[in-house]
Length: 75
Image (cartoon, rainbow, N blue to C red; front, side):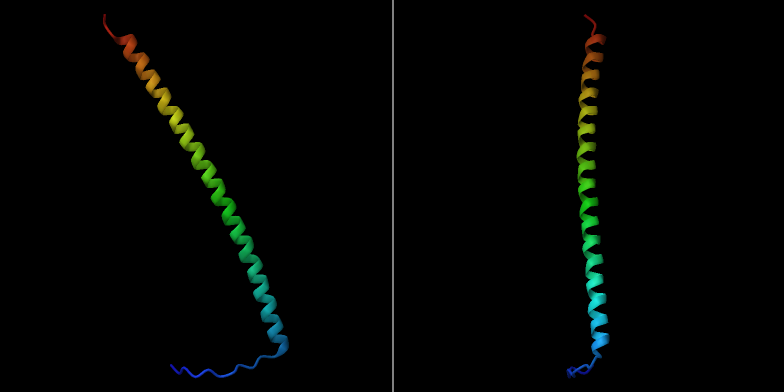
């Protein structure tokens, strides 16, 4: 593969079209990044909520187990 760099000639109209397409692509990438960040935030919130529910269920299980053991004890 040759490593010689040679100038590339592009019509001004073509150059402007390329710049326009690149700007459009960057806008789309920016929106995609924003949407991804929003989805990640929603997922973090959802994971936090699920952890809280799990903690509550564990606490209720422990209380019910304690009550069951207490009631079942023979004096």
